[in-house]
Image (cartoon, rainbow, N blue to C red; front, side, top):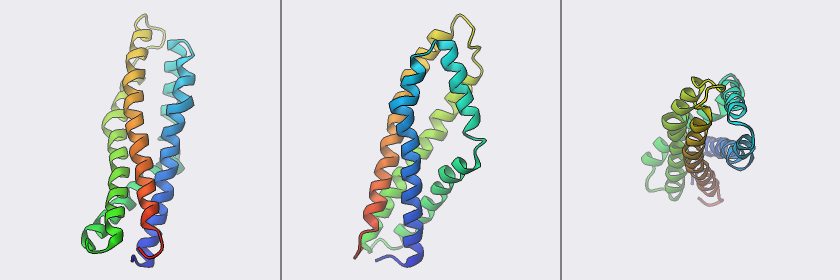
Length: 162
């Protein structure tokens, strides 16, 4: 069984991971498909506008990175209490969320920044957008599934008697 402090951290990480998974899911299911229906120049402009707004949102950044920090704390607790039944769920859940965060930082952020440099009115914009879209969506599904898996594992850690 986990103590109240660890339970509170687990609950906040589960909520944060779920919120972030929802953001990734929204991008996968209607934001990006909606942008794909626009001309390449309009899609690039709209996407760049979204990506300028995201880091400017303190609440989104708090949830995204705060959940990452809490996940690190939960992994430390899990490693220190490996004999506890809950530890495996905490380690898996926190680890999966951190994978989603790493995919964001290692793949999405650099590629988003590259797209910011593209002139939406350039003759090569359509080819750039098509190439960007396909790869970006594939990696977005990876981070969606890992954040959702993290959420589920963290919720399972909160079951009574664990």
